[in-house]
Amino acid sequence: MRARPRNLIPQRARTVPRGFTLVELLVAMAALAVLAAIALPAFFEQLARARRAELQAALLEDAGYMQHYYAAHDAFTGTPPPQLPFTQAPRQGVAAYRIAVSVPADDPAAFTLTATRAGAMSADPCGDFTYDHLGRRGLVPGSFAAGRDAVRCWR
Image (cartoon, rainbow, N blue to C red; front, side, top):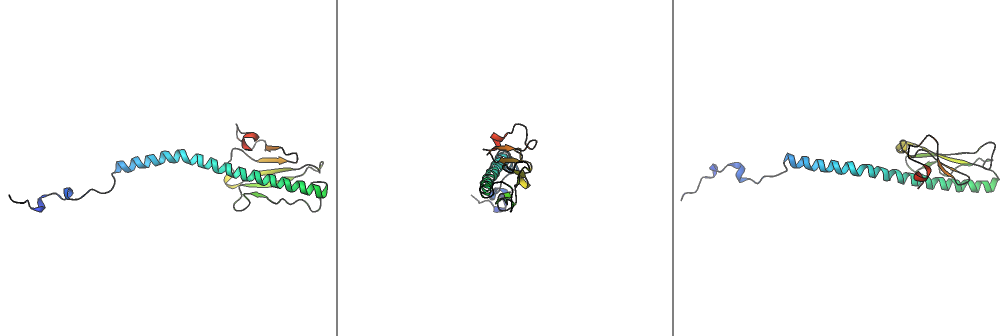
């Protein structure tokens, strides 16, 4: 029996197919899109919670400083005026919150620390945070979204 000449076998039959088909690539892309749609919002919410927790720690440390200032000056106003150790959160890098202290003119034995959203947290639904000389934790009225309250945001 005679052997067939090599050139009669089509080129496609001699090579092993390589790569992915378009349908396989589209299915993989769709699966990645579904995973991203589920994972990204959860990731960003956890990132916001971490930033809020760092802010709350900074507010509590600033409140401790204010209490030490009061012990030394018998008021939250005086000379020199109180300089907060942390005026932003996070303490280093780009600020997500800016912290300011206010002392009522008619009550030098009271203070309120206010953390205003900035940068990446400017659209945070928890709004701006407050902490006062009595240890009351709150949110600035009108700055938070419906369904949010101090108890839920201060955790």
